[in-house]
Length: 142
Image (cartoon, rainbow, N blue to C red):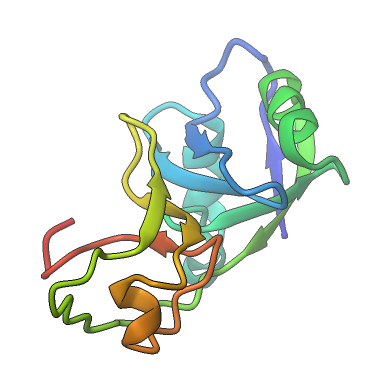
């Protein structure tokens, strides 16, 4: 949980978020220079700093689009965060389609898994990929 404050709503918040999942906002970028997030991070313990790759579960108990609206208006807010579990998956396509339906934001830093085909390489390999996961790199490239 983070307590974020800004005295003036014209001060940049410092977060870019993607809203593909219905239950969380994905922090795709953090700008700390002259922003509310920068002020928060300067005083927060390292393991509690806001950073790209975290999920915002709620803002003042609001979810989804309401949370985004609240972040734009906030002077002070309680932000509940979720840290992701990062894991690697090796997939051999063996002539099959990958079988992962993806969605992305052109300004984002990851790809959202929005569906998995039963007949694709991901299922055939028994990969532990689920709808709602994020692909953050492929073969080491981000």
